[in-house]
Image (cartoon, rainbow, N blue to C red):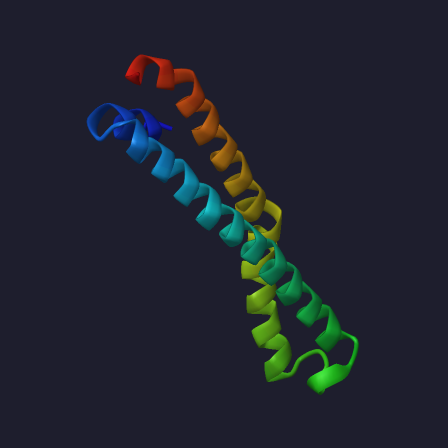
Length: 101
């Protein structure tokens, strides 16, 4: 939360614009990746549990359980929280940019 303020004060408004553009570009792509990867790993477990690739109890099923354990937080918490972080950084920058000019 302090990053936009610190960048704006110590480096300048141009750098603050670059920070916001970079965080928007990388944050949106990372959030989309996390949401899609989490859903894919969750669906992979369901696919194996339906009897494909050895079914329940196989080594593939054990691997998909690990993937589902990682995938659920990806799609349910990490991806959406990045969207909130991007919005928060933008709002903080908009509020404090008059002090920099």
